[in-house]
Length: 277
View 1 (cartoon, rainbow, N blue to C red):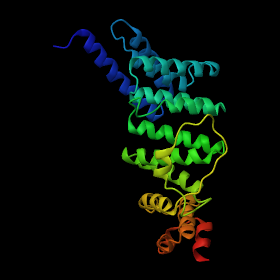
View 2 (cartoon, rainbow, N blue to C red; view 1 turned 180 degrees about the vertical axis):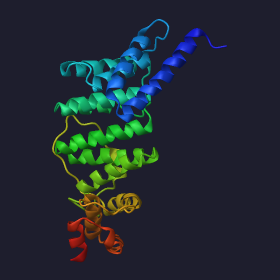
View 3 (cartoon, rainbow, N blue to C red; view 1 turned 135 degrees about the vertical axis):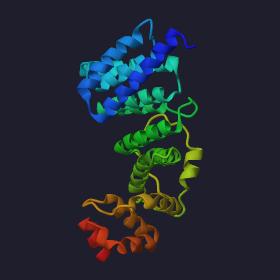
């Protein structure tokens, strides 16, 4: 028979699921009220739960229950607590992602990159969290004009997120990689797998660029085509434009022919004009 403390913990976990439903369903006022109650319970003798307390404090910080000047301190506390109680857990990874996003939003790119680098397989984090951290790191490096590591991070993100069945996030990673890759294409360039295998730590980010191999472009386009071809509607389809540009650059007319055959479904006027020219 479960002990009273076990029953209390089970009840706390069950009530936290209700909070998650409120957060995803857009009920902020009710969520705030319930989260305050759950936070008190997670600190009580009867229902003490360090991980639950960290998650609740993190969610409440993101919901704006504390002053903006204290959010970073609170998110750092959550990271430190989870580093001590459950390092490498999905929740620990999520805390690092949130802290990294907070640094990025403040324009603290280097701090964001350092924080996100703590998410790794060597630290035991799950595949999907690693993929999301690499996607975010790739975006930051791209903003900094450091395209060589940005492309590596996005390539890793695409692979990890694909393995985790996170189709939309993998698509985004692939499209952002492709957008950079089309700037310089060279058959003599190393493949991305080779670049990743030999990559080593650097003293600091800088301005860098690399040429992409056509076979990598082909791999990315063929991985995203099944997703983007499901629905060709929408007045601004930059994704389809990238596919068309990629085909032109590496001499693969099949992608353009595929889009031409479904011209009636396309609503992006720029794309229609390009296909008819």
